[in-house]
Image: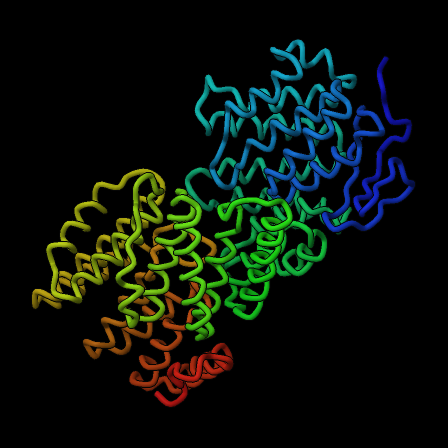
Length: 520
C-alpha cells in the first residue's frame, strides 16, 4: 500500500525533536526546507536531516541519516536516492561510482525495479536523474552535463520544489570542469538567488550562492549569503567555513579567521563526539585559518597550526588528504613568513599520491629553499618534476615552475633573463581563471614580479604589478606592502599612504615582533 503524506509538502523542522507535518517550518540548526516524499512518518526526521546535511556538503553525516531512514522504512525509495547522492561531490570533483551503485542496488538491482518502488512521478524523475549522474559508460563531464539537464527538467516541472531548483543550480556549477566560467557561475547564481528569496533559511541556496560569487570580482554580491549561511546551519562545520570564501575574496581577514576557527572547532567537536580519527577533522578550515592569521601578522598562532598538522599526519597514518594539507600549509607559511623559519623549511612531506596543487607547491618551495642554501641541483630537479605535471592545476604549476626557474637564473647572475621569465609567469597567471581561497600559485606571480621590479628600481612597473596582484587577491599583505613602497618611490604618495593605512588596520593585532609597516 502506497504511503504518502497527506499535506502537499512536509515542512521540515529539525530541532532536538522533530515532528512530522507541522503547518509551518521551524528554525533548526541545519536550516529549513520542504521536500514532498512518500516515506513513512517515522522515517522523516532522519530523511529530512539527510537532505539538509547534503545541501551543506556534510556527506558522511548525510549518508548516516539516509541509511537510518532506510532502516526505519526499507521501502523508502528516496532514502536510497539520498544515500547515492552523498557519493557525488561535484565541486570537489569527487564521485564514488561504486558506492552510489551499491546504495541504489539495495533498493533494486536495476532502474526498472527502482522506478517501480517510487510511488510518484516526481520521485521517479529524481531516480532517473541520479541514474545518469552515475552512468559509468560515460565520462564525468558527460555525466555531469546529463544530470544538469535532468535537474533542469525537474525544476521546471515542479517549480514549488525549492530543493530541485537548488540542486539544479549546483549541477550547473558542477559542469565548470575547466575552471571558473563567469557565464556558468552567474547562471547558477540566478537560480540560487530565486530560491534564497523564497526561503532565506534554505542552506543550499545560501551555500551555492557563495560558490557562485567567490571570486575577487563578484564577491560583494555574495556578502549577504555569506553572513546568513553560518546562522542558517550552525551545526554544519562546512557552513561555518563557507562564508570565508567571500571574505578571502574581499580581504576581510578578521572574518576569515573567525569563521574558520569556528568551522575547525565544530569539526573537532564532531570528532570527539563520534569517536572519530584525526583525519575526520577539517584540515581545510585549518588551512584557511592559517592563511588569515598570516595576513594579520599572527605568525605564532599560524606556526602552532602547522605543528598541529604535522602531528595529525603522524597520528593519522600519513593519510593522503592530511599530507596534502601539510604540504600546502608549509609552502604557504614559508611564502608569507618570507622564508624566515629554518625549522619549517626542514619539514619533509611524502608527496606520494598527492594532487598536482599540493605537489606543485611543495616542489616550488623546497626548490626555492634549496636554492637559497646554494643547492641549485635540487632546484633544477624540482623544475623538471614540475614540468612533468599534467592535468588539473597544470597551468598553475607551470607558473610556479617559471618562478623557480627565474630564481635559478637570478642565482646564476642573469637578472635580466630572470625578470623576463617572471614577466612571462605573470602573463600566465593573468590568463588563469579567477579562483577562491589561499592563492595558487602559492606566491602570486604579479606579487613576485613587483618585488623584483622593486629590486631593479623600476618603481612604476612595480606599482602596476602589485596593483595587478591585488586585483586577484584583494588586501593581501605582501602585495600591499610592495605597493606602498613602489608607489612611494614612484611619487604616488596618495596610493602609498592608502596602502599603509590598510596594512596598519589589517595588522593591528599582529605579533609584537612583526614589522611595523607604517615605519618602513
